[in-house]
Length: 119
Image 1 (cartoon, helix red, strand yellow):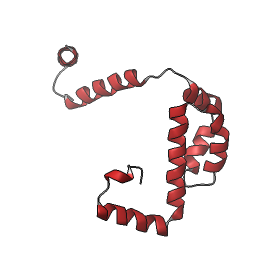
Image 2: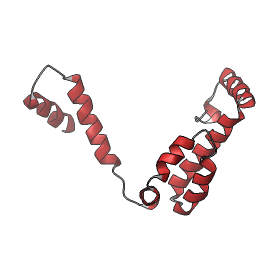
Image 3: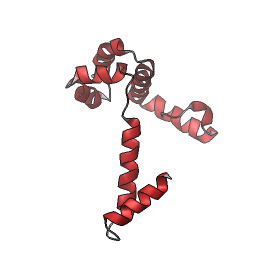
């Protein structure tokens, strides 16, 4: 439901059309998610309040209610030019390597694997 329509096969297109006809709330939820992505890409923090009001009555109401608990932080995340994506990526990589080595070695081997991976 969230992938681009131009990459779908004929059978996938027919399946999605049947689902959309029988469950219109999914179409609304997909549109709400697309609007949220657009808001993030365009850094349109002013659109947050109307989006939240509309989202509270859709299938993504639990997501909207969670965001409502700290609206200033969400708005700051939308409009800010800063991102911690690089940091999160490095942490994810570290955890992946650590889990792969679970029970096999200590910190020295983990350090060796990470240092050689970055070189």
